[in-house]
Image 1 (cartoon, helix red, strand yellow):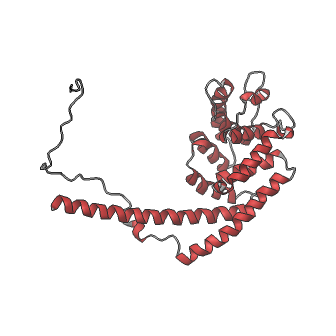
Image 2: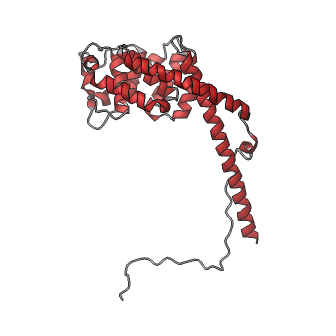
Amino acid sequence: MGTCRGSPVLALASHDEERKPRSYTPSIWGDFFLKHQPCTPSQLVSMKERARSKQEEVRQILLDTIAASSELVHKLELVDTLQRIGVDYHYKKEIDELLRDVVHDPQHEEGCDDDELYVVSLRFYLLRKHGYNVSSDVFVKFKDDCRNFASNDVKCLLALYDAANLRTRGEEILNSAVVFIRSRLQSMMKTLDDPELAAEVEYTLETPSYRRVERVEARRYISLYEKKVTRNDTILEFAKLDYNILQALYCEELKVLTAWWKGLQSQACEICTG
């Protein structure tokens, strides 16, 4: 039998060779999660019962929005709110149905009555985020004679910036939109009277929506949504409950993980010193 040539031979360590323990930097959390309890068991049970009730109320809001001849902007903003506030994973079926309605309803086609830049941008962002094939040509009509987007509305520009960041290769209109809007928002940010809006602009320029960590965004957006005059209190309450329940779950998982790691370290020390 021939031998394999050209292949490096890996030297195997001797079984008698002493294994030296490695020193890793200790976790800054230490034993924190072994003792930390964000809520009592009875509080958690109460929150879960309340959350189940609110979850179905929010579901009914979604179903009513699908069934009613609501304006497109209301449908889109509802989906966007549920996503940003972190509870959309409870309603995947309903959201898919709503977006299919947006795609296939002639009233909602590009170029019909919904000519507002904000609505078109939000529609494009949500559909593309959910995997629908949406043409970037819908934005052509919003360009002025200088081939820039003729809008000074911060809300519109933020929506367009998020939409443009979902561009694919070769979509020059969206490539130019990102560059133009970034420059426009940076200059507008200095003159905004609303500090919260200025902070939102700064945060969006730093981290567009599609790049945000969902749980971190949920915590941030719950605080923002609570201050909105147009907020839905049922959605807000459910989002808070859902967030706290998940936090309790994560803390319990970290408690188990910390205990496992400490046990593993003890075993390693026994092996090395044995």
